[in-house]
Length: 419
Ligand code: HGY
Ligand code: MN
Ligand code: MN
Image (cartoon, rainbow, N blue to C red; front, side, top):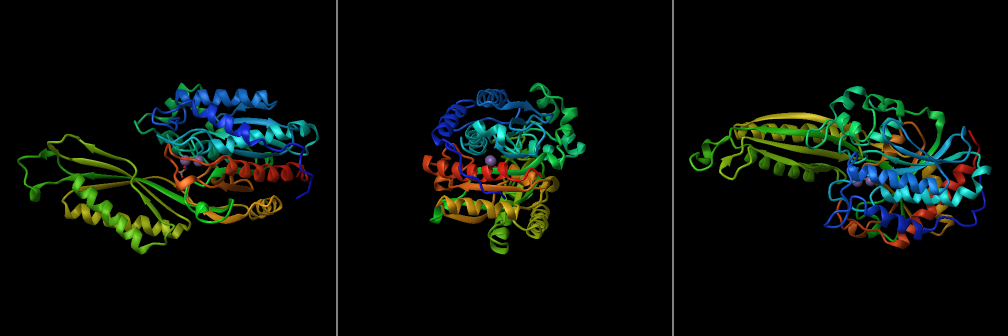
């Protein structure tokens, strides 16, 4: 990697903070934070806002067939160094998750703009669509990396059952063309993503930034306990086929199992639950749960999946209810590029920022991009380790440090040999 003198300006953190604040108003929730799921009206408004911001910064802007927003600077035919993340949010999300990586990337573009004519590589900022999986987790980055199959696109749907295709059409996109968003390996030289850590690790150390070595794998499934709706007053407890009682016991036993018999990086989450028919005087006849299992090692995910399933089946049988388990998705654990880990570490050291190599417990667009391109991630601390929550926060000094390291890495990469 070629060493170049730092540009005169570098990234201006106050502009990133200003942009974060402006973006947080689009889809801003009454309780604070944002509600900006992919393909919603608020999301389309945010994409239009970002496109305008990027145009004003002198970038060429386009939306690809999946709905990713791509803003580009530098030679039209050279491979690009890409910075990106996402501007969609979970329900009740915070204002930094994803947005920081996109807006810090845009600020790097502003800092590079004067030198764009002399760059050997192009520079791109990408806002990937539906990272959070309102319809299909990592949709945009997986589409770009050519890692989607038509079957899962056809099956993808929102929490309310609305098909992905309908949501895309409403947002002005043609769902039949999503696979056209795939880019050849030669298009992209490297991918670098700045993101908030979303956990408590960095804050508990004296380190300024995290350098991601691996991103956890994630298995998502839907469990449906099938009992019998009955009268809540006349049916003795011993004669019920209570789907919720079975689900509650199974959930408790599965947590005990994972906590006691698996490595500490194994995570189990039941994040959505729906009871039917859902009335206070009716024994629940059906309970649907989402189950997420995450771990750094695939064998831990496989074993947790098998053992939680056996536990749920045993409890269901004990309670006289049926059980249906349906896998929804599996994203395997992914390692980041060792070259980029080393480069980020070197840049941080030059800038006097202390760095910690760490695994990411959250999923990121970088894990999809890493399947086709050298990819790396920089973490900045999350106050109190809180994320996916309106209280999510990262301070100005941390944002500035992360943006400077990102810019230092980008400068090296865009100035290096064009191959
Ligand atoms: O769920 C995740 O890990 C990420 O925030 N999309
Ligand atoms: Mn998130
Ligand atoms: Mn994120």
